Every structure is written in structure tokens, then in C-alpha cells.
Image (cartoon, rainbow over all chains, first blue to last red; front, side, top):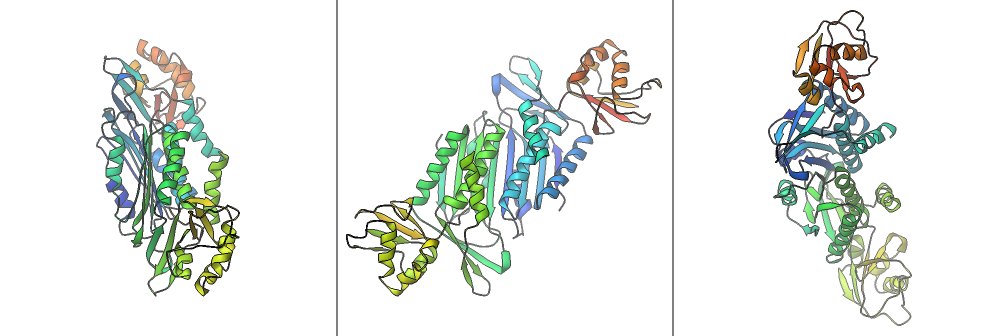
Length: 151
Length: 151
Length: 83
Length: 83
């Protein structure tokens, strides 16, 4: 099973991605997903996401392969959007499928915790009053990712 | 926020349920979902699910209210199907939304672990050769549910 | 008193529900199970191994020593297997 | 040697990438940062607080003491904030 990894400006379709991991199969017992969306905190007008083309895909492919080694997955999809995204827009999708519920749930949490802290994306906030601000990394995200190192 | 809880024979639409928790909102930062599906283990022809009408809805409403008390959720949907379901069919959907990623992920895992062990549903397996067998409760499911009692 | 059966308990008893009027000495869930077991061969088979059966009283999970009242709704079933 | 900049490092330097030929005494990531900081006021501002900057060499995260070779692709950026 090869994880599907995409970096794109376009929106993604959760139903379509889910169908792709289950269509014609009868061995999938659980499908876990996480969708991260753009919140409109403090008058946010848009998030602008940039990434490091090449490194991003390599890094995500490597962590997806690690997830497949740690859990018995039948499918794994990671889609991360870039560009200008308005409040309410979906930013990232992690979708994992397995015969076993716990494997799907845990690998999904593992992948999104990792994406938050180790994938080369950067977010700039644009506000309605014209201000701009680069989002700073959060210690709580580092802690969430680090718990998988010990596990 | 009132959790949406449904017991039904009909399929559910993940995209529609997701849209219902996010449409017109800009405060949802994360959306976690789990879909449990019917696996075709050992020549399974169909799963037949029955439940305890009345008690099921009450029990799920109570645990969903507990999830809302433990985590700051902006939305929560639980749909559990009953009746005869073929291999590959979706059986259960848990969908949680929050401003915070960890709240969505943890409450989703909490609810599905609980549904596995405390909600009054029973599954009968029907095999291609005519055999029938009631699915037995798993100790691993009890253990998964019990970890939330300690948390 | 209304009694409901689910899953293989229902199949063995041979019905999904019944109205029963147990004698006064049936005071709790365990007592009701013992009394029901004597009602028919199907009941006897269903309740042969009481440890494999779970109960609910008025739609709440109940332990064997839970007291019963005349108007209660009591349900018997195997350990649940949803999700 | 190709150097890439992302996020506010790119904004301060004023360009997204450049080809550089540092002298032989620039042997590692920290040395390259110090050398780059002297190339322009924008570079100086970008690298003023080296502890807030992360690096990658040939598309792998790298520490300040990682050795560099002439053909390397080196990137500088703030701590990542994806997901």
C-alpha cells in the first residue's frame, strides 16, 4: 500500500478520498480522519500558506511510511493545501484506514501531530485591517508530536 | 451545542454530516471522524445489527453530553446503523468538531471506544454457508474504553 | 413487569418481550433471572449461564443485586458488541 | 551552493533563493549563517537572531554544526507551522 500524498491549492473532497480508500474492499474495519480548518480568530481575513517544494513531499512520504510500519494500515492519504485560504476553509486532511479501529485512530493522530511540527509549511495571517503576522510555532504542538517518540 | 444522535437503517453521508458541523462557522479548527465498516472476515455474508430502542438513544446522548463536558466541542454527531449490512458497508460514524485539534481527536476516540463496549447494540454474523454466529465482546475493547475512566 | 430480551437471549427464550408477574420473593435482578429460568425450556436454556448475561432496569445497566419494582422495564442480553 | 529562504527569512533577505560561493572557511550551517549575515542589510536582519532560524541541507533538517559541501542545497526558515 502506497500512501497518497498531495500538496495543492485546490480544495479536497473528504467523501471522494474516503471512497478511494474503501471502494471495492471488504477488509477495512475503521477509517479515521482529521480535517484542519482555518479559524477566524481576532479578525483574520485569510491565512497564506507556503511550503518548501520537494522537501515537503519527501518529509511527508517518510512519515507516512513510518506510520505504515507502526500500524497495519490498508490506506493512508495526506493532503495539505497551500496558498491563500479564507476563514472556514479546510487546510489539511489526514485519512487512515485499517482493519483495526485503534490502528486507524492512532495513526491519524500521529500524522497530524507530526505535520504540525515537522513538515516544512509556514502560515502567515492577514487581518482585515491590513496587518500581517507569521504564525509562531507552539510548544503544545511540539509536546504533542514528542509523545510519539516515546511511544 | 446539542449533539446529533441517530440510529437508522439508512446509510449516512460523511460529507453532508461534516458540512453540517462547519457550514457558516469560522470557529472550527479541527474535525475528527471515525467510520466503522463491516469487514468480510471468514466468508461473512452480512452483519445483522439489533439494538435496544430507547435505551440506545438515551445512553448515547448521555455519553455525548459527557464528551462535551470533557472537551470544548463545537459539534458532535453519532450515527449508528442497524439491520442487515453487507461487507464493506459503513456501520457507525463518530464526528467531533472543536477549535482545538486535540479536543476533536480525543473526543472522537473516546466516543467510539465507548460505543464499542457500553452501547446496547448486538451483531450477528451471517456466513455464505448458512451458519450464523453472535459476535462476542472483546476484552481489548473493554480495555480501550476503560482507559478513559482513568483519564 | 415488562421483560425484554435481545440477541441470543431473545432467540433462546423464543420471544422479544413479555409481561410477567413474579411472586413477591423475587426482589432483585438475580432473583428475576432465577424465576424466569423456570418458566419454560427456552427460558432455562437462555438463563443457563447467568454470568454471560447482562441486564438493564428502566433502560439503565443494572447489577444482579439491583432491586426491582412492579412497574419496571427489565431487559436481558449478552455483552454488547456495537460500534 | 544554492540557498533558499522561506517565510519571514525570505521577506527580510528580500529574495527566495540565491547562488552563493562562500570562502573555504565556511564549513558548516552556522558558518554559512554568519557569512550570509554580512552580505546585505536584509541578510543581517534575517540572521540577527540565529536561534529563531531552522535549516535544512539537501531537504533534510540540519543542525548548526552540520558540514556543508559545494553542491549542497541549503534552506533557512522559521520553525514550521503547518497542519
